[in-house]
Length: 251
Image (spheres, rainbow, N blue to C red):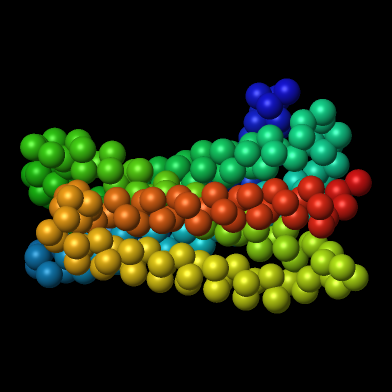
């Protein structure tokens, strides 16, 4: 039944994400056609490259967060999610399905962002420059997959916190119904705490230069961030699961 739950979640959200992806790519094409002019100055190329990257990442990031927010909120707390809640799947698997589907669509939107960058690069970056930038020289493959892993770790943390905030906003603690603003503040503070703890641990382990563990951590300082982010993400997931089982009435 878990596979069926995944299938329903994908079907429930595919129109929104596929439509948004097509819209963003279409807007990029139209915008690029309007801006397609000869570029003769290298500084102009650098400006357009930075601008296209900034636009693509910002727009796709904001759009992804909004859609993931709507996906979770509608599928649990709105009438449109009633069909999925009738499936004989426990809350743990339902939440796991939402997390997996959200990560799938996040990676899809990253592909959309890459397409937007390529569209903006037309006419501004020469073929040789692009080929050298994306050449698979030594270490580039490992760096590429490490970048994908890092983005998914950060995305998993943000998605887990978003789910926690939405669930908290629909929870009843004692006789008090948690206000959405309070839930949002708690979620933001939790994210800030996560980053602060990760930074503190990174500095702490890097300072232990004479110990084995310090030497190991210095091999790759981002390892501290990965572990910390994943740890706090799973804490948020378990907190969300607790609220779903004990503080929220989904009937």
